Length: 427
Image: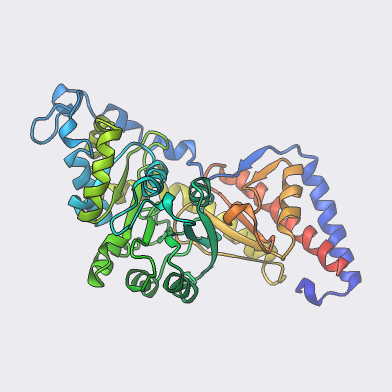
């Protein structure tokens, strides 16, 4: 029965049952951290052979014979082999790509900072010279996106996420009216944390919408573009769409191998129009002689091409899928029909978004912490760390074993019931 339909006696009984179960779990002395989407050791082990794929001196040379063990200033923006590899894997034109170090987040930060210092193609002046720069933040969303723009002085505007992506009616209205809005954060496939994949209509509306700012940018973080867990899904061709409407300069595209091979030791890339790249390269050439081309070549030799990536990611999926099934099946069994929680049903990515009863997320978080289980901070999935409804929790199932995860989610469901019963009894 839904908690909202229970009388006080039934709610009191539900609360007592939840408290009893919670105290039993608490006495077990659990210790588990699910705060971030960290690949498990089993997943990392999938790429271990990559460390041995370059044994001969010839393995360190590019297709044209260039030795990548020394300075190669002429290709400071990435090895041609790596550009071709990412172009194949992500269906992005190779001549739109810059290959960087291990972190796409670093490239995103640099891109915002570069806009602040120099502006972008279409800017009248550097963004830091404007009175205010505003960014749209679809939420629940990725906390590190929000922190990048907040740290650089931008004003953040919360946009509700729907089952098809950002609330486009609101997005279109705001960007058409306010020239101070210069960007929007997007995770178009298996969004963090909702798991939503943008619909074709949403992608088209983003590509075609009219903006008051001539230098408006879409920060297209395709972090989970190849991270299918069930059936394989294609990516939206955002460059083709934006080109169709004459807005190709609007797109800044990012991705990396962080959750494909080794987090912290992977390879990242960004893609943008030729006009954008001309301006970006003029700055990067003052920053670096070039990023780690040996690591770029190592990834190319090991993963080879798009089919190699897909085969590798199917092995990742075999490890992750039982964990997602564990969480979703437990939610349905323990919380289904109670009217106190709702959750996404992601087909890929790294997270599951759980909405509990309004005003209960912090209580659930604290109960879990007291039981020895760490979740992502409440509010982290919203700008400025403030969930206006105090209801969203980001679940990261990747790192624990299935057995550990089952215990953690059992405790979580008890905490959700306990917090909801308390709230309804107070009403």
